[in-house]
Figure (cartoon, rainbow, N blue to C red):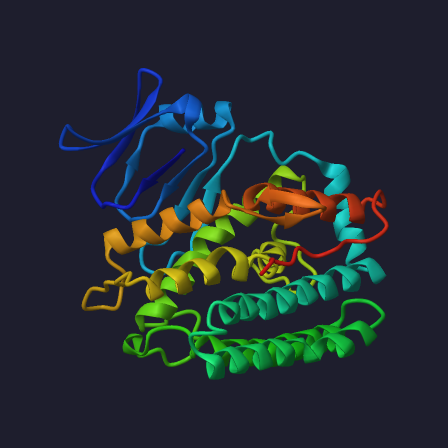
Length: 338
């Protein structure tokens, strides 16, 4: 069970084993703590009591804070003792300096490319009879997305300016082809200009960015639980305030969790509502959060059986930890099924 708070001016308090959301003493929502998995604060101007913070820390319930305009996950509250696995963090930092760092960076890109291709194949298979030309175009695009894999495999050495530039170039070319194909399978009335990240004002990019923000919080939580440092990555460069390892691992899950969910939603008639400033309205933000978290509970093929995506994400984070500690010979990416 998740508590999603997306209204300004409300207050979250503890009341007899429950978290209660109120405005002017009017009860808006209430959930039992014993069944609560996480709290997501998706708006500015939300009050929260210290009792809620302490109870969530004691029960291992994370409180995620997302920017109401674009879904940027600007903070998470965890129990203070949760991130105290020094051995793993030391191994993670050392791995950056040798070939393990580049191996991880390559794997994150490889997983993303394969999942992009499978996302397009997933979309194509439902159009084989209804729209053969579109089926053919999507299948071709899936093949072209994978054209970068041979060059990716040839990269060797350590993570440095040259190898990172090569990785980002390969990932960027594949992404451009992927998003060209996505344009073919979303409603034309969305007026989609192509993929835009921060500051995007069109509805579909705004929804994607918000969905990625929700997913980012889940990835950071998985990394922390695995004892890893979310701000010390391999593929993405380290900068102050940039959660580079979070951005690394999220690459394996963007298509399976957010792209598939939101492409499906808009094709089923989900209206993305924005205010005059281009900001997603409250009901739209809540719907995106609910659908992304719902998708996290659905299953995908993984290690020989179907498992929930939330469990897969946590296992992938643990696999990174065991790889950098030398307990696992290789790190394999998660690739969505189709």
